[in-house]
Amino acid sequence: MLGLAAKDIVVRFGEVEALKSIDLDVPTGSFLTLLGPSGCGKTTLLNVISGFLKPTEGRVFIDAKDVTEMPPEQRDTALCFQSYALFPHLSVEENLVFGLRQQGMPPSERAERLRDVVQQLDLGAHLAKLPNQLSGGQQQRVSLGRALTVRPSVILFDEPLSNLDAKLRESVRHEIRSIQQKFGLTAVYVTHDQNEALAMSDKIFVLNEGQLEQAGTPEDLYHRPRTRFVADFVGSANVMQARVIAQPDASMWQVETPLGQLMVRSDTAPVADTVLIAWRAEAAVMGMGPANIVTTQVGRRSFEGAYTDLFFDADGETFRVQQTRTTLVAGDEMSFHILPDNIVFLSDTVSQVAS
Amino acid sequence: MITPHTLNRALMILLMTVATLWLVIPFTMAILWSFVDPAAPWTPDHLLPPVMSAYRWEFMWENSLLKPALLNSYTLAPLAALVTFVIAMPTAFALGRYEFRGKEIAKIAALLPLVVPTFVTAIFFTSILYQIGLAQYRFSAILFAHTVLFLPYAIRIMSVSFEQVRQDHINAARDLGASAWAVFRVAYWPALKPGVLATLLIVFIKSVEEFAIAYIVGQPGFVTVPTLVYASLGQDFNRPNAAVLSLILAVPNVILMLFLERLLKSANPALSSGKG
Image 1 (cartoon, each protein chain N blue to C red):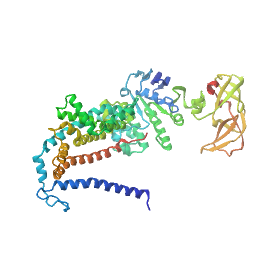
Image 2 (image 1 turned 90 degrees about the vertical axis):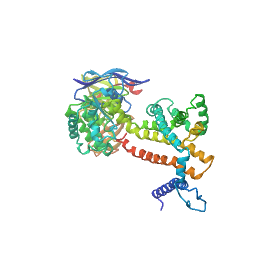
Image 3 (image 1 turned 30 degrees about the horizontal axis):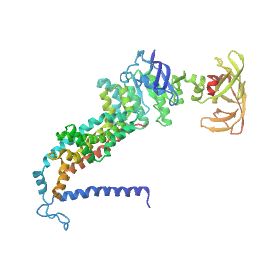
Image 4 (image 1 turned 180 degrees about the vertical axis):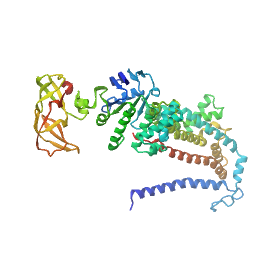
C-alpha cells in the first residue's frame, strides 16, 4: 500500500517552474529521500506534501486519500525542521505534547505517548528544561520527538542534520533510521548530502532543476547512475566521452575513450554512437587484469584517511582513482584495470552535455 | 597599559557617570525647589533652601488646575496608546510579515511624520480639525491628533516585532494541527509581547508629555499637565511651582521608562532557540 503518493506535481512561481511534473510513490513504512543541490525543488516538494504550498497542478495522496486541498493543520503529516523550530518559551515536555494538545487528547493518553517517546529518545533528564538550555543534538531529538508523539501517517524531514557537527550527524542518522523502522513510519527525507541519502534510504529520488533525474535504491543510484548529473552528484564518478566502435556480444560493447579502448558490459544499449560513460574512482583495481588496463602517471595525491585519491590527466581531462592503501606518489607510473561491469553508459546525449 | 578591556570599562564608567548626572542634577534641583517655603526665598548664597516645607505641593494641589490636568492627561494617554496601537497593527503586520514592491519606501513614509517639528504639525493639524469640525470636542480632537502623531512609533516598533516572529514556529504549530488562536499564542505572542508593551508605554509617555497639540487645540479651557507646566513657566513664572509640576509630569515617566527597559531586556533570550 502507498503511504504517500504525488501525481504530476507542477509548481510555478510566476515565470519560474520550480517543479516540472513530479511523480512520487512511497510505500507505507518505507524511507524515501529527496536528494539534490540547493534550488533543485526538493524543499518545494516537501512543502507541497506537508500542505504549506498548493501545487499549481497535480494531486497529493496520503494513505490513498486525496489531501491536495487540505491545509497543513488537517494533514496527517509531521515535519522535522532544519532549524528544529522548537517553541522557545515552552518546556521540552510542553513542546513534545504540543501536537497532542491540539488534538484534544485526554491527559492520561497524552502522558502515555509522552512516556513512550521520552524513553525512545532518552529525553527523561530534560523534560523541564527550555529548548535553549539544550545542545544542538538534544534539540534535534526534541524536534524528532515532537513529530513522533502525534504518530503521523507520514513523517517529513527537512535537512534535519545540517546544523549538527559531523560526528553527531552520523549517530543521529542511525537513530532516525532505526526509529523509522521500529515504528514502521512512512518517511520523506530531504537532504543535499549524498552520504546521508545513501546510508538511510530505502529509495532515493534525485532531483535537479525541478525534475526527477533518477529514482532507485541507494545501490542502484550509486552503481548504475543513468545521467551525468547523478553520476557526479552521488559520489562524484569519473565521467568521460566514449565512441562505440564494436559490439562483440549482446551485452558487451567496445568503446574508444580518452583512456584508450575499453570494454563495457551493459544490459542496456548506449543511446547513441557517441555517449558518456561513468566509472567509480574505487572501481580501479591496481595491476593487470583481463581487460581495460590503463597505464598512466599519477598527477596529484590526496590522502583522505580511509582511502587515498590519486588524480591523473588524460586527453586534457582529470580523472580520479581511489585506493585504500597506496605508496604511489605524484610522478609515479601506475597501472590499473576496470572491470567491464563497473562502467556504465549514461543516457545524456553528448550534444546536451556540450551545451 | 591600556587594553581594549580597560578602555571599554573606562568609557562605560564615564557614560554611566554622565548619564547619572544628567538625571540626578535636574531631579535634585527640581525636588529642592519644590520644597522651598515662600516665607524664606532660596537665594544664591545658600547651598540648600533655608526653610523647607510641603507648602508648594499643597498650594498647587488646592489652587491650580492640577486636578483636571491630571485627570485629562491620564485618561488621554492610555486611550491614545490603545487607539494608536490598534490602528498601527495592520500596517505593522504588512511591513513585518509580507514582501511587496516598494516596501522600503512604505517603511520610510510611515516614519516621515517624525521629521516635522511638532509645532508645525500642530498648527496645520488644528486647521484641519476646524475644517472637519472636530475642534470643539477638545478631548477627542487631541486624542485623534496624538494618535496620528505617535503612529510612526507604534508602526515602527510593531513591524520590527512582527519581523521577529519566526516563520518556522508558525509552520511547526500549523503542522501539528494548531488552530489560528493556538498559532498566535505559541508563535506570534512570545515574539510580539515586548513590542506590544513597548508601543503602549512609549505612546503613553509621549502623549502624557506632549505640549504643542494639547496647547494649541486645547486652549484655553482644556488643560493637561504639560500645558499647565508651560503656563506656569510663562505668564507668572514661579520656579518652586514649576518644580512641583514638572516633578508630577516627569516622575511617572521615568518609572515607566525603567519598567520598559527591564521588559525589553527580559524578553529577548527566549526567542533564540536552535540555529538558522
